Image 1 (cartoon, helix red, strand yellow):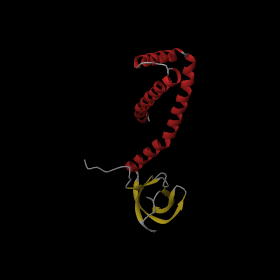
Image 2: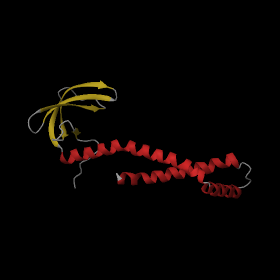
Image 3: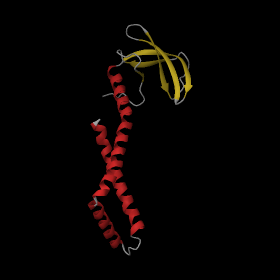
Image 4: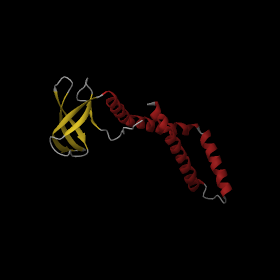
Length: 167
């Protein structure tokens, strides 16, 4: 989680720089259209920034949208973070087995694949997966990695986001 937050720091710096640039470009058109030279424009910008930093009432106004945006971004990144951890765990510790696609049906957001596969005890597990593509054919066989403690927790193998490399 901390690593993901560290990756977003350059984006936040970029957004802050972009906001400062937009503010510095737009502000002269609103307040200093009478500036005669570039030097006067830079002086006006410097004084406007100094005035902004000395006005404490604006700090709270600027703080709350930042806090709300950061909280929203953190909450939105959690499902992807946990999906990635689950996928990595299943790749490391999941039990491979052959699954048969018994049927498939289109739905909102993709195609529901209905799978059957045997677990380690020989019990037949029936589950569904949501995919974006239609399988090759009914009763086609594919490899899945599943969690023996929770047999319905599975991923298809090979996983498109990961590549096996020879070291």
